Length: 160
Image (tube, rainbow, N blue to C red; front, side, top):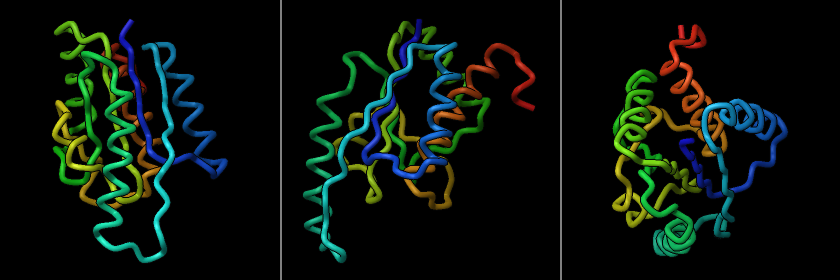
């Protein structure tokens, strides 16, 4: 069974995010071996300098890179990434699985994004939209889109 590992920087606090995330994680369990890893977000002062942000992103990147599954196809979620339709994401997931990739890993950074080292390691840089979303909402959106990708692949009416 295909393994999907989502690595997120930052912990969900709001009940509506945790409930939605848990629901899609449960649904994904019927299609893949799903794993979610939450990593702590580095603490920064209220008005951090760019150097402080860069240092925090580097520490987060080190933690992320240590947890990437060996041989996984890695997708970095970042605003400058490629935009895919739901159908295109479904094809990408199916193609990776067909190429013998047993693990797919999606990475969501902190509120300041991802360090370039994580983006460089990625097989795909994926953008949800040109709009800005809270990274906690991005997690729920990603999980829903992964679930939708499996539903599209099976020909379900979920995706209309």
